[in-house]
Image 1 (cartoon, rainbow, N blue to C red):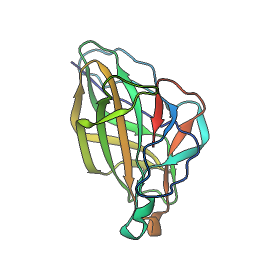
Image 2 (tube, helix red, strand yellow; image 1 turned 120 degrees about the vertical axis):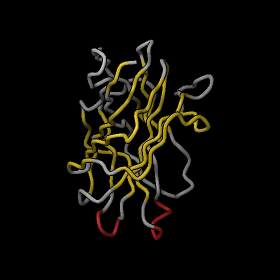
Image 3 (cartoon, rainbow, N blue to C red; image 1 turned 30 degrees about the horizontal axis):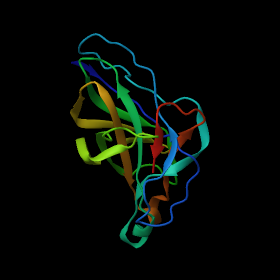
Image 4 (tube, rainbow, N blue to C red; image 1 turned 90 degrees about the vertical axis):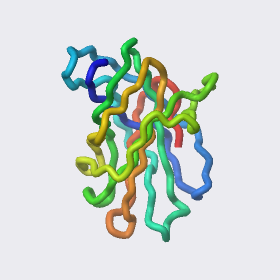
Length: 188
């Protein structure tokens, strides 16, 4: 397998958080460009950091007093290399109230059995999970180094990201949208 990095950005419509029990809703989608690399070199496998929109989807685990507003976002991508991908880094475009101090949870899921319109993450099949990661935070855009590589064979997957950030101290975090939909719609 090639050692590589992967970059994402969520693509979703304007959404408002209305309850902790809110169901995942379908919004705009994901896709990207694969760059081949020589073994041992980190390269961008997948990218959606272009075509930014002026809005975003909340992806935050708030402190207990705001639990009713907790939300999670996920977006799909396709591992195109027949030997699979070794993912070391995830990057996102986002905005936040006060940068720094946030941690993130990152999970990779397989695609739902049988797909759908749009496809959805198979929440029963977590391929890799990481919690309490401290991202490099540039005004809400994250570079997230994974503590161990996530190795995925060829196929369709979903990356889920949730920012753990205290609203009283740092405000709200949003995973930015794109003006271009590609792949399946993202989910929230």
